[in-house]
Image 1 (cartoon, rainbow, N blue to C red):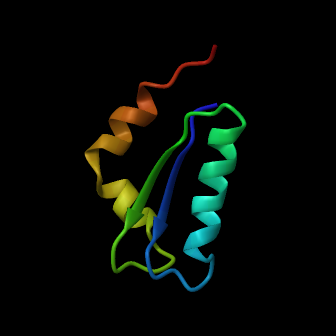
Image 2: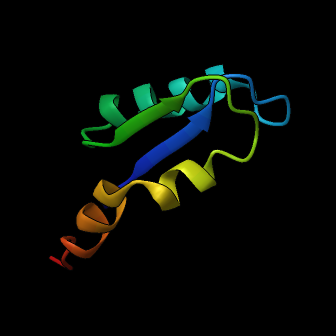
Length: 65
């Protein structure tokens, strides 16, 4: 399952390390997730994901297998 993790470097709701831990666990389980840390951003890193054109290219390139 394609997964792209976005998180803010200064998130005070979900500790940034938890995102890194999730990424590492997915990799260890054989997954191939993407991860993006947004510098100087808190919990609202989704705005950065929505504004990044690569997000939409990646999202709409996914297929069911």
